[in-house]
Amino acid sequence: MASIDGEGIAREGIDLNSDVGESFSNWTFGDDAAIFKSVSSANVACGFHAGDPHHIRKTCDAAAAAGIAVGAHPGYRDLAGFGRRFIDMDPRELTDEVVYQISALQGLARAAGTEVRYVKPHGALYNTIVHHAAQAEAVARAVHAVDPNLPILVLPGSEIQRVAEGIGLRPVIEAFADRAYNPDGTLVSRREPGSVLHDLDAIVEHVLRILDGKVRAIDGTIVPIRAESICVHGDTPGAVAMAARIREAITEAGVEIRSFA
Image (cartoon, rainbow, N blue to C red; front, top):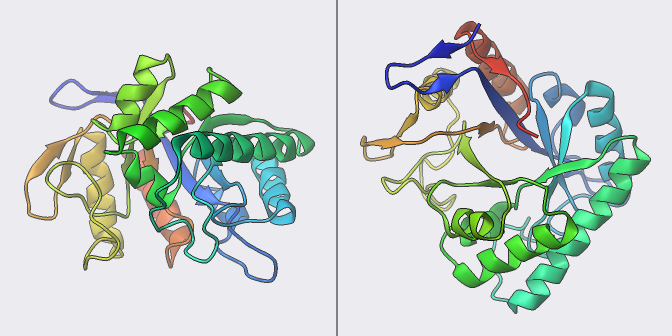
């Protein structure tokens, strides 16, 4: 049964997404199949920041079997830095690299009997296009070139949201279950202490607050947010238990977990 909070924000459903498909060669990151028991959407690495064709295909197979929506998770070409370092690159080159990544995942997803249903930029690229107009335009052009019907996950009030709306893409507002926020609604840098949340009770409280249309920033101020999707990072220690706990809390709050795509 749907519920409505005091400010009138509909809570008929919320998407839970997770970053997956990040295992590479002999290195294993996260437990994708276990995460899929809790989430409704899978942000699958496309090989530039993490993942390789074999592991990406396995993740797509598991997502298809679990009925999970598959999304492309393109990033900077930065395996050594896990895509968490800014790269100052020609916007045209960035457009082509994002097109390449989405298209590669499309092929592997289709081979697994599913398809790419949305896009979520990864790591430093995601944070850069919050404020970097040229790179935001480059990413939006890439998504539009591949398929203008693909939604894109964004932070509210970001450059990428503005550009996506301007060219006819559907921006989907995202919040983060395990990340701390700045007072301006951006994420606290991973280089700063307290940027990643680990206490399960605090995370659940944070998620329930998101359902009510707000987050508490690192300085204690309340920031409004109207999220359609909540991210649970699959590479965070204890991610499987955290995702299960979040799913349980959301369900107990009377909110359905379902993909937006």
